Image (cartoon, rainbow, N blue to C red; front, top):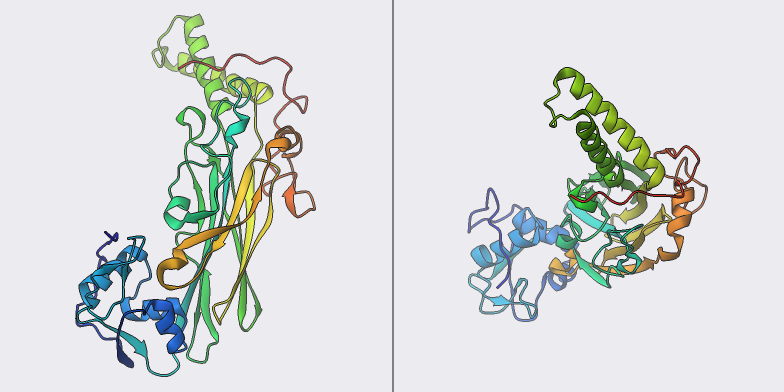
Length: 364
């Protein structure tokens, strides 16, 4: 059964866009074939009919307003057919403005083959991000270190000139919990949009985050030790006890940073969108670790625009130690895997490397 979602303010069943002609759908039709027939961009045709291109909302309109009752072979969407009732969609009369929405993504993960209970106790559930992904999987906030999801729009006028452009609300950084359920620290997202000419815009987005699990656990353990030495319960030591606990937590953080600490992880992607709907996606640069897969939209036929295919895969298993040495400070001048980080986060270790001995990971 196709997944549907009723729009917040749905269009009435008899809605007809202005300056439009009715088109009776038939067997074999899909959004892409109808758009091609009338020389329209596919996404613009969907938006023209329903003022949305969110798959769940489009499915709701196809059943409720168009009367589609046959599902696609994979069961995910409603499809056009001759027995749909009323079975009518609308196409614009003459030149029209359009809104082009395109997206690319990276999914970064710690290869499960790197699991080490002492050095790297948390890994992700796969050793490769896989050949294909859906939009929902990118935005799930679980199963990966982080996702750089770049989604943009370009709006054109009736002369097919760029009227406006920008990033969608969904474009940005997605991440889940790190070791022991502790959230990582995200860095400010960097976005730029530059007009190449009157027909194309190049968008870039840099996102990243940093695990703070070692520091958080170190602070917690230090506070427990402090409370044990002073013979107090957490928070029961009055103002002086609170200050002592705070000092203990700070010392715990510093100790953890010298025994076990990890640099920022990040990716930079770029997407060029032209008024004819063509795109060019790029994985510009990324940290030496972890592994990453780069994805572009696999097509724009109907709702297939929300499926993505892997363009490249980066295996970072051999570069873990190199990343821990070179992942700090300003950016190195290189493309693809690069040392440093976009935010110039410095190395907090006093000696520039981990201490040769490590305490056991606190048991909670």
